[in-house]
Length: 89
Image 1: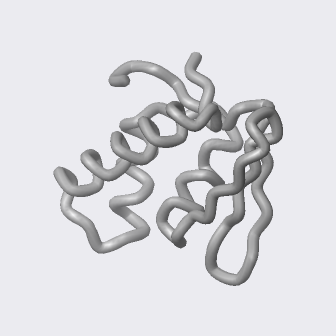
Image 2: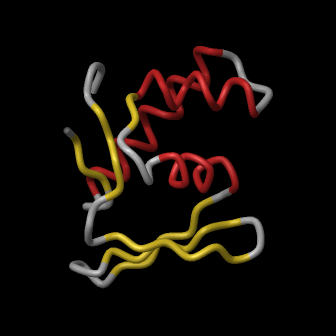
C-alpha cells in the first residue's frame, strides 16, 4: 500500500466514546471499537493521507519505534480496507 493515499470510506461513521471510537460500517451494518491509537489514525483519515504521513505523525505522538509503528499502521489499514471502512486514492 506504499504510495497510496488513504481516507475514510463514505459509508463509515465514527463516534467518540470515552478514550475509544466506535465505528459503524453503514453498508454492512457492522460496528467496530477502536483503541486510542487506532482512534487517532481514524481521526487522521478524515483527510487523504499517505501511510508515511500516518507513521510520521504517530511517531511524534506515541512512544513507538519506526519499525513497529509502520507494521502496526500497515496492519490497521489492511483491516480497515477488508472491512470496507477505508478508501484508497
